Image 1 (spheres, rainbow, N blue to C red):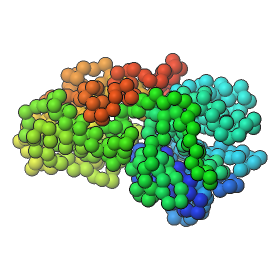
Image 2: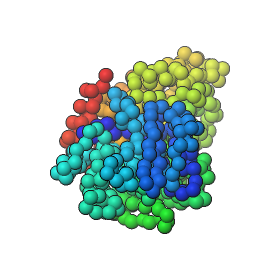
Image 3: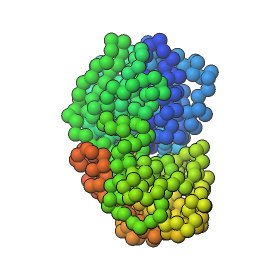
Image 4: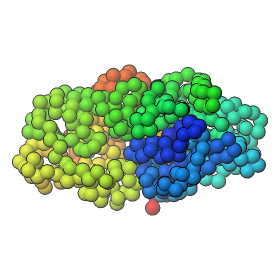
Length: 472
Ligand code: SF4
């Protein structure tokens, strides 16, 4: 149970009667494409029913003009999904619609970014309530639990009952026939932003989705908050005290640089990470080269602080996705060659500082170092604007298992033996936190230090390994 939902995803919601809500959702999902490229879906509601369309592929591949024109309603939610290996099927695409066949007006749709860590318990609650589940999705478990409570109480109370039981990372958008809900777990692991625009409200994984649909950031959805948006306006309530532990990965890698996280532009924090990196691990070199795109701001910061010239000497094919987001190992390897090409004249005979944001599996870095040496680099000094990723993530990011993490159980020297650079240095844990300007205890840093803000059951840990064994 619950093993099919280990994703980094994008969610979006809009409540705007009279507006073209499906097209607004389409544009927002387009702006959030970097958070998931395997499948895309939109659900639209009227006061009578909820309709859904989802399929494998990029937003532009899934939705046509005709489809969007058919999907008329007062509100909509959307989802881009990145799924784990072997789970890349249409059935796991979101949003998930929980149908009420007797009364379609009580159907609702749900889209989720994150991963619940007690799906087994929730499934037990569900069985006790006499309901059954067909898929392995934790999102569906959550939705079915809400549904099983609805017979006894209002939708709002059913949602309250469910969040009381759920543990883990969840930034949710939920669409009923009369309202849009935004829900964020008490630890605020994944981001969720609230925006306003003419005629309604929008909610998105990242505020960077708002400008494209004419929206403006109002604020973050608070950890432990439920927001209900309906024809009477916006209603907020707290279901738990906030004990914020935002995922550090969102700060140095996942979010678009133009997103605001906790009110601060991600770009500036990444430049500061690069500066801090130069202060911590300077090296004699000729030029600084960033790995595009996610290493660009840190590269700029490193060059600024070190006084070395900055060159964009790795040219990216803009039409290839992030290698980390492509699930199959073979695709990842080909992906690097398809994606980057070095500028020989810039690199020839130079001592390079190669700045990237992180190393997960190490394939990309090894190939880049090789590529730069082949292009004539005299020395390659690799610098990372995050600490070594040593432990798996249970809160919604696909690092799979220890075996997949190059830094798990290896010293920096041992990692560099695999990468093949002249020197390799990481930003310290204190350094990456300091660069954000937020307190140390307000982050999830579990994949670096194994201190988990939300306890993980043994079943959950075992589940990781079952999932790995299922890989083709
Ligand atoms: S374990 Fe790492 S990737 Fe997962 S939520 Fe925490 S910081 Fe983010």
